[in-house]
Length: 553
Ligand code: NAP
Image 1 (tube, rainbow, N blue to C red):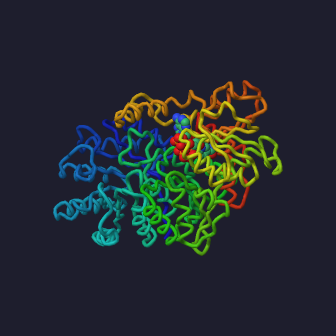
Image 2 (spheres, rainbow, N blue to C red):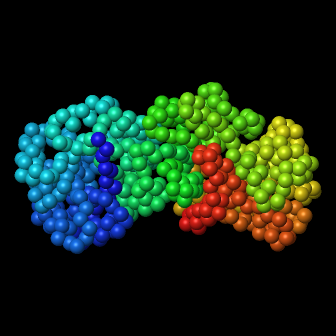
Image 3 (spheres, rainbow, N blue to C red):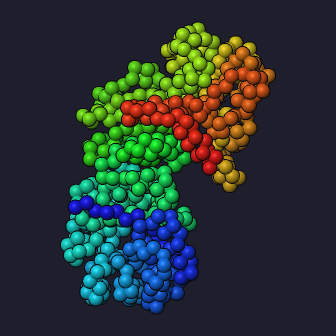
C-alpha cells in the first residue's frame, strides 16, 4: 500500500500564545500536519491541552491533521510531567479532536497505562495511536523485532521507531525496515548522520517526517528547516521512484553541490534528487557506505560527487571493484565523480581537471593547440593543483610549480615532468598563464571571533597559532605580490569564495585576462551533471545558484 508522507512541523511552545504563532508559521511554511508537543507547555493541565486543540479547531486557519504528544522526559520530553497527567492530557486531546496521539511503547507495556490509553481510544473511534520507541544513543539492537512487537500489541497502531545514527551507514536499518514493511509506520534517524533519512522518508513511505520552521524550535537533533526540505531538497517532488545522487564528504553541510544540482534537476523537471552525504571516517567507512548503497538497488542511487576526505578512497574503491576508471584519473590519484552502473560496478572520473581546462578554454577562447608549450605558473601543490597540472600537462603546457613546501612541488613536478620552485622565486616567473591552486584568498568558515578563538585554543605552539591566524585572514591576501602581475599574464584563481579574490582584483588593475574559481566550479559541476544525466545543464543557472549561495553564507 502506498502511504502518504505527512510533512509534520512540531509545535514546541511554552504557552498558548506562542503556540498560535508557531501554528501560523508552520501552515504558512507548507506543513501538512502539526505535532503539538505538550511536554514543552509550561504549567500543563488538561484544560490547557483542550484549549490548545479547541482554539486551533475554531480558527479560520487551514485545518491540518494533528498529532498530540506529551513525551516522557526519558525519551526526549522537555518537561518531566508525571505519567498520570500525560495520559490525562492525551485522553483530553483525543476527545478534543486530535487525529493521532503519540505514546511511548515502553509505557504502553505497563498494564494500567495501557488500559487507560485503550479506554481513551475506544471513546474516539477516529483517533489513531502512534506507539513510539526512541533510542537517543545508537541503533536499536533488532529493529525488525521491535517493529513486529509494536505492530502486534494493538491493532491499527502506527509504530514509530526513531534512533540516532552515529554514522550515515546506521541509516540502512531504517531504510531496510521501510523497504520491507508496508502500511503506516514512522521510521527515521536522528543526528547529522541521519539527515538523509528525514529527506528520504517520503521516497520510502514513512507516514511522517518532521521539519521545523525555526532551528531554535527543533525538537530533535538533525531536524531540518522546512524551507531547506522544500526548496533545497525538492521535497514536494520526491516520489518512490525518484533517482538519487549526492555528494560524499566530511564535512558536507556547507557544500554548494546540493544547491547546484537540485536547481538544475528542478529547471529540467527531472525526477531526481541530490543529497548531502556525510560519510565520516576513512577507507573502511567509505567502502561500507558504497557497498550498502550498491546492495540496495531499490534506493535508486545513480551517482556521486566525491570530495574531501574521500577522493583517494573513491579511486581505491573503483580499482578494487573492477569498475571503469577514466585514464587520467590514475595519474591524478583522485576521483571526484562516481557513477553506479546497472551491474553494480562503478565508473570513476575526475571533473576537477576537466572543469579547470574548460574554464580556461571558454574564458580565454583557447583551442587545444593553444596549450602546446604554453608557459604556465601553477601555485600550490595540493589536490587541486595535482588535477590541474595533470590536465595542463596532458594538453602539452610547459608548467612550473611554485609551493610553500618546496618538497611537495618537487614531488609533483617529478611525476608530471615539469619544473618547480619556491614561492620566493615568483618574482622571476615567465608565464602566460598563472593558476592559483592554494587556499590563499579564500573565505574560511570560522566567520566570527568565537569560532576563531575555538580553533586557536586547540593549538599549542606559536607556529600553529600563527598558521591559524593566517588561515583566518586569508581573504585579504594574495599568493602573488601585485607588482609581479602583468597585462600579458592571464590569471586563473581556483578560489571561488569570494568570487573576486584580491589576486583577481590585482590582475584586473593590471588589465590582465581573468578566470575565477566559480567558472571552474560551474564547469566541473556541469561535467558531473552530464555524467549523471547524459544532459547539459544551464551554466548560467549554475553560476547564479553558486553566487546566491555565497551571498547567503
Ligand atoms: P590542499 O590539498 O590542502 O592544498 C593546499 C595548497 O595551498 C598547498 O599547496 C598549500 O601549501 C597551499 N597553502 C595553503 N595555505 C597557504 C599559505 N598560507 N601560504 C602558502 N601556501 C599555502 O587543498 P586543495 O584541495 O588543493 O584546494 C586548494 C584550493 O582550491 C581551495 O582552497 C579552494 O579554494 C580551491 N578549490 C577550487 C575548486 C573549484 O572548483 N573552483 C574546487 C576545489 C578547491 P603547502 O603544500 O605548503 O601546505
